[in-house]
Length: 69
Image (cartoon, rainbow, N blue to C red; front, side, top):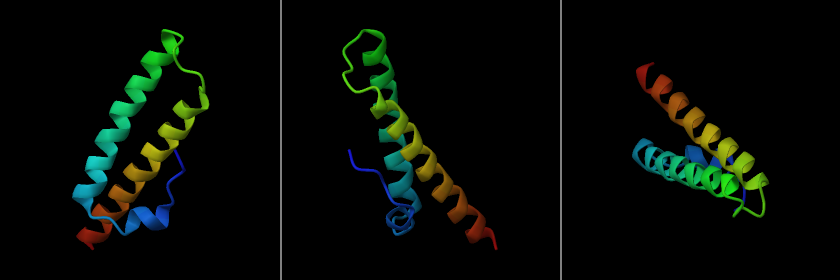
């Protein structure tokens, strides 16, 4: 999974970003579960997914703050 760029994320609408955040949360949950039952081969996917989720949530917050101005 390639890393997401903030520039690409800012081009999306808030609804699309929230949908992407929900998908990343589900993915993160599944990755953590797979890591616990020793099914996950690359544990760095957890870190990358966590960081991608943080980027998405940050962009959502930025858009919310800019909308209020």
